Image (cartoon, rainbow, N blue to C red; front, side):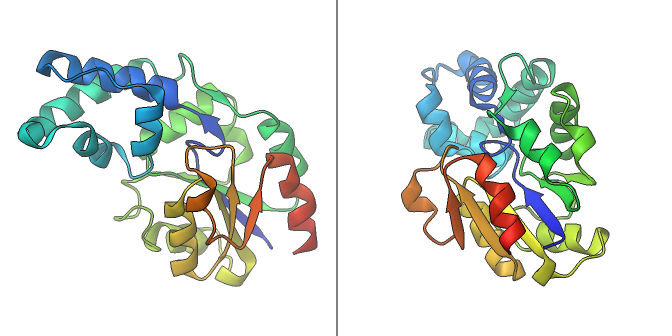
Length: 211
């Protein structure tokens, strides 16, 4: 293995409280009930546009563009109010010497980069891409193949680490190995298609050394 692709939300950083706050701010003027963290966890993973679609009742879908605008206004100013990297993420990234590392997020690229910069994590990555970087987003293989091409490795030398079925599916379609983490936003039953499943990010180092 020469390249590790990491999902962002639910894998490297716990962002769900800030996303929930931004959602509730965006939805409030339209008389839609407040969402809980559990509600948000069930909906995240496919990018902001799909998140807002899921949050809006069918009869209010016509408000989507307005709600997205309000969400982005709020979220951009509160990106790391409560978001923090998961335990042992920094030490794990520091221990993954000899590997190229990239972030592949369904969050927009500018927000992904700024989030990682504000938390002091951006320095660990050779490339950070978002939902609007490669023309398609996970579960498409296109963003995976985009990173592989940009960093000059082969699919056989690459592996993706994520907390959702979208990460696993994108990896499988691109012909790379997949690792699921169980501490993120998807229940374990969504992760059974992964080649490997880990409970703790620290398990990554010994696992990758064996591959």
